[in-house]
Image (cartoon, rainbow, N blue to C red; front, side):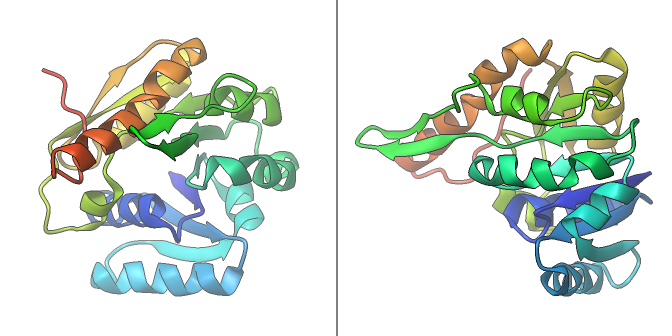
Length: 218
């Protein structure tokens, strides 16, 4: 499978690229607005994996055009512009995965700040061509620990979407990362409940000096 990580030079994109690069044989496309930056990041990831992974860096639109699965690893405040540039380049069967969460910092810590659509996933669905399934995943993964290959993972990620086949495929790809489990969390209507867990985990980490918290459901 070809997986595009748009915004793949950021923390979450780096973590997913490194874990998939180490644990699977997927072809990984690291995307960025700046193709030189994308190539530099891909080269760095490949070097950290001793050159054993299939990782290349390209401009976001070129990555999206080649991919079977497109992970939008960018800030929610940049998603609208990104989707407007890649929408017509997606294959009709490409799955669009959104891990983004709208948040803001206040006196009581981080709080959920969804867009007017009600959730980031709803915004992505609104801006994504109809044939392409939209799936939410990876919201609660601590990016720093994900990118540290010396860290053994023991986390779950909640996966939601309106197409059962697409949710199943994302779960399978997610579970190909060692130590990562998945649970289905219903349809896109549940997006706000899942997305709001991220600022809660960040606040818990800050209040309890326990940074890098993730989710494990037993």
